[in-house]
Amino acid sequence: MNWDYFVYFAVAAMIFWIAGAIAAWKNAAVWKTYLLTLTGLAIFFTFILTLWISLERPPMRTMGETRLWYSFFLPVVGLITYSRGKYKWILGFSVIMAFIFICVNIFKPEIHNKTLMPALQSPWFVPHVVVYMFAYAMMGAAAAMALYLLFFKKKAIQTQEMALCDQLVYSGIAFLTLGMLFGAIWAKEAWGHYWSWDPKETWAAATWLA
Image (cartoon, rainbow, N blue to C red; front, side, top):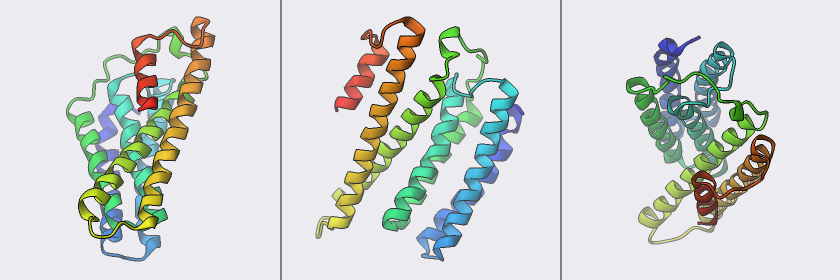
């Protein structure tokens, strides 16, 4: 599998994701929303998995590969949020964001570097990156929910909606924390120390504190 096939998998996944978002918006049977969205996720993850096998390394090295995971996790978080609160707009929002990342990957894939430097050849590389990307997706969903409550729920703030927003933030912070811990362990194995205050670590800490 190579990037030449990405557009086919992406288009197929998007068709199912859009159908799932429409089903949610029209208050169709919940199982239809789950089935359509999960089918799209299965198609998209199939490309990630086969690309992983083809490259003989995790597809997390380049910006194009990083955007693959954002495109995958956004509908995942959208579906989780939808399942908790049945907000029919959240799946549509997550699909739109995934579509943006997919379009960037189609027109500017940035896949020129296919090798992993020695420091990245660590068992902590995959869990660190995956956990962080999932955390960012959770925080993005929390931000979307916060904007929804701020601008579209001015007359009555519902406790359940605020609770869901809080849960997304707490979950995002938990995954950010776990990602930082994985990164520290990885740094210890690769460079001999847990923390060195380099720019990436510093901004990771700033993001977590914020």
